[in-house]
Amino acid sequence: MAGALKIGIAGLGTVGSSLARIITGRANELSVTCGRAIEITAISARDRSRDRGIDLSGMAWFESAEEMAARADIDVLVELIGGAEGPAERVVRAALDRGLHVVTANKALLARHGVELAALAEKKGVLLNFEAAVAGGIPVIKALRESLTGNRISRVYGIMNGTCNYILTRMEKEGLSFQDCLTEAQRLGYAEADPTFDIEGNDTAHKLAILTTLAFGTQIAADEIYLEGISNISIEDIEAAADLGYRIKLLGVAQQTDSGIEQRVHPTMVPRDSVIAQVDGVTNAVAIESDILGELLMVGPGAGGDATASAVLGDIADIAKSRPGEQRVPVLGTPAAALEPYRRARMRSHEGGYFIRLTVADRTGVFASVATRMAENSISLESIVQRASSTAPATEAKTIILVTHATTEASVRNAVAAIKAEDYLVGEPQVIRIERPKAF
Image (cartoon, rainbow, N blue to C red; front, side, top):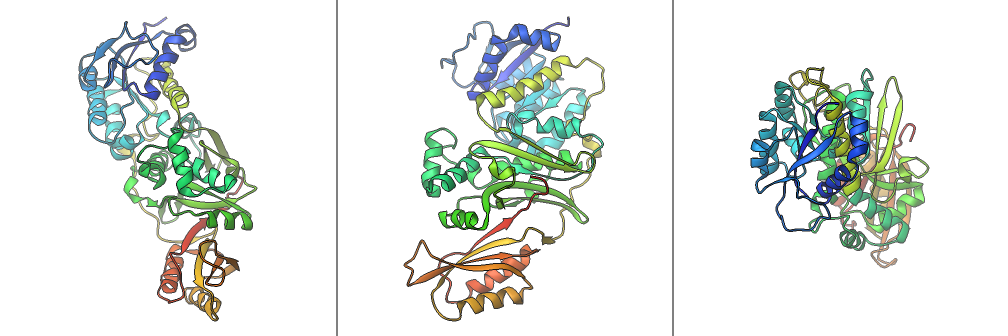
């Protein structure tokens, strides 16, 4: 049996503590399945005195994670600090420069610096693994990087943020407001004290950027993503979606087109009877469409200490099972030097159509005006219905719900802008894309 694989953990929060407990508690099982022992020999965290329920006495303690990366007697550095810049970036670079393998759960770091870090890892002949960075315990990185080799992928999409999915689920099932659901998510630890990164779609965007590169072999392009969060989703939207046979989910979508790659994160209506519509609470789901395999859907826990630690441990086990000198799987599926420049797709017709909610003054001619603005922008309507407004007295305002056939984002936005210029609109319009998954 090979010598023990020595691990250094930078960051002992929820995930780091879970990882340490699993490795120390299942040492014998891991040595059998991995063909060598896995030992934590060094750790670094902000608070040495905190009780984490783990015996740390046999591990070297470093006040500085950067010092640990530079000096500790380790083979693998596990980065669980977080953040795209600062200590996390410096620690990972230092470890790779030293020729150490690196495992990270840091999607923000990879979305910002993933290509250059991949190039450095490949130059040094070491592994940079990051299964836990996207969708927690779901092995989507391994699937795209290894299992689907030879498949031409046309689309990757899914529910990638448990906080948003929890909020939308509670809003629908219990009739609660967005703010009430957010407050409850914060109380339960599903949302941060400052939830902006999650609810405005940034977290999903970072994950999508990584999946896009793995799926299509292009440079990471996190700044090329159309981004819209869920903070403007109302109970009215939830109820209208249900009446039309849909549920609202925050989806990240990346797809290959003739003119380039389209990346977008936004609230989406999906058919109530689709499988992805049934994914509730903090659960994540990632769907992959390819030419050989067809459609693949992976569902599982997307966050939490144990789920993320499981993915990190899987990456460590892959390193333990690897042997010096053997061919390495490229960090991003394609060698960093061979990644194609990112080419953003031209605007095209969205096949699923759009949901448009307008609250308007209750007077003659409004319906006709709305229909005219749609026609002026070549938008064909599948349906148009009137509902009593839940935010204004029935005698003062009505809610108009429109569902369009396939049309472009530009046409919809232009039509809505024209309607906003009229004097009958009350409040802000709502526009939500509709997706009709092929198999899910």
